[in-house]
Image 1: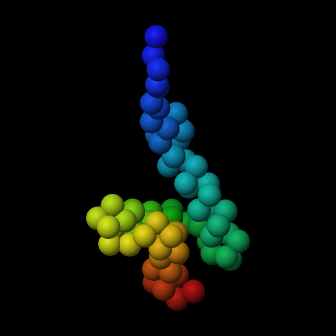
Image 2: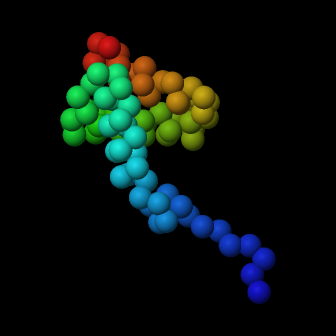
Image 3: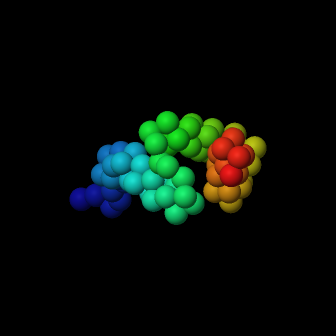
Length: 78
């Protein structure tokens, strides 16, 4: 009998990319931005970069949650 079972939810049980796309689309619309594929792709690259910086210990998780939008909005002039 197994004592523990570990599950990898991201992209195994849950479709993370689809969920992220839906969430960011809704967020952009709330800010009056047109959620084009190009805009969503740019956000995803910035977001990934922020999480990589967290893994290297350069920023905190709390900072990731803010900085990804600050960087994108600065590029957009929002």
